[in-house]
Length: 245
Image 1 (cartoon, rainbow, N blue to C red):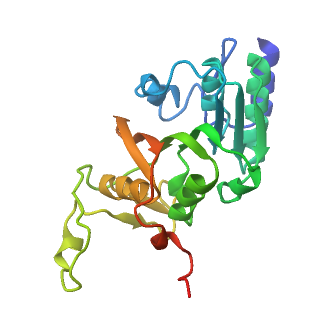
Image 2 (cartoon, one colour):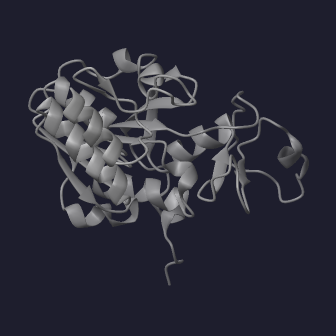
Image 3 (tube, rainbow, N blue to C red):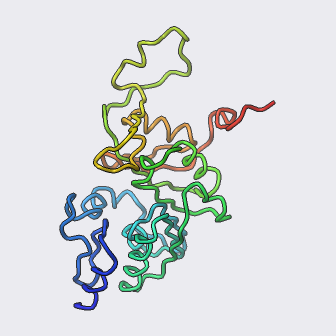
């Protein structure tokens, strides 16, 4: 146990509090026992038996969710992150716990290069750190989500959902003044002392983005968490980066 404690310390500050055979990696986390304190609120919404299934954990950090999916019997688990410190922590945690998980340094914008689709894709705590959030959702739909998407984003503003109409008149400007209308708040500098917090949606905005990207929301088990299934696109033309000529 002492060796594990020393190794954990050498790997730097941990954001995931993982129990490594009695050694907690982030016992003083400002959110408490994170992310387990959040996971327990939606753990039952994810299939308990993932035998034979493949899982992609995007923005895996120190690998908490990758490890939890392996515990449920997932055959293949791949965790990706763009931070080498987090990846080193994830590899070490998996090694200590005897979990056969692969970790790679990769951006969400590069998921097409994987060349495979996964039964379960975990995309938690990433969207609001992205300069191009809707592009990321489109890339997930097009390239890696075979069935389920486990999604989470920080949300601010109204937590109520306003039904959206199929179209609005050009002169109808009052809709944008409503607090429940789908919105994304842009952070120019920092939020919570973090320069990577770029876009934060309200609940209506988050759900609208998921639907726009082609995901059907099948469960909303926790304040910021959505269990989605890969659905059908309403209008593929609207997702084109450049207009077709």
